[in-house]
Image 1 (cartoon, rainbow, N blue to C red):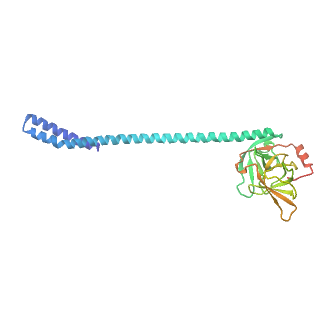
Image 2: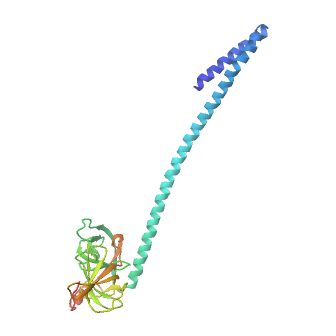
Image 3: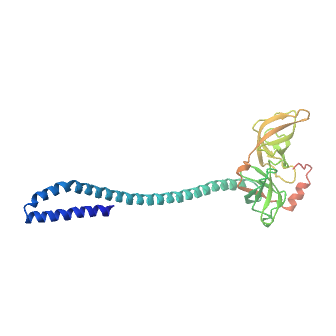
Length: 280
């Protein structure tokens, strides 16, 4: 279209040049020249405006293409920086968890080994996690597993590089417990849900809501004094001799990523097995 406009303007210019030349040689053409100028002025003006508009459109198209390239480049850079921020945020969250786990490790008197959660039982029939430590790391069945918040569960199966851990909330889980303030002893059982039940509590006694339930150490699995959870309600059995308590676990089992496995020697196992009570 630009070329057609240029041709039109070129033709008009040539005609004007010929007219001017003839008007110089022949005065009779002077009137014709003036008429041609008057006639061609709108066409020249329109052609000039058309060329200006086309140049502006071309400049705008080039500018728009450049802006799109810059916009795409900025979007890619933003996505890259956002991914870096997400990675750094994950490192920060992981560092907080590991610091809490390290502080907990320093505050207990047992030898422990850290492990990462690498799998979960997704069938819904049991509450089990898989950790990245096994017999190669001296992990054995019935070793207790904890986090910075409290008791997680116990090892029920070991492989060379990995182990299965039965969570405290599983229906098959049992742990001897003692209330921190009232000192009543009972057995905490998993329900398969995000809460626990503490059974075999005496019908008569002063109980404290929000009292802490700790591991009693009576048995061969869990060491004494580990945090289990908080007492939220006390109930009476309709046709029984005992009361039972609802316990909210200290550990959020849906957010477990790192744990500690408490290591035991064979001598410790034999010593625990010799105890009178065997509640776990």
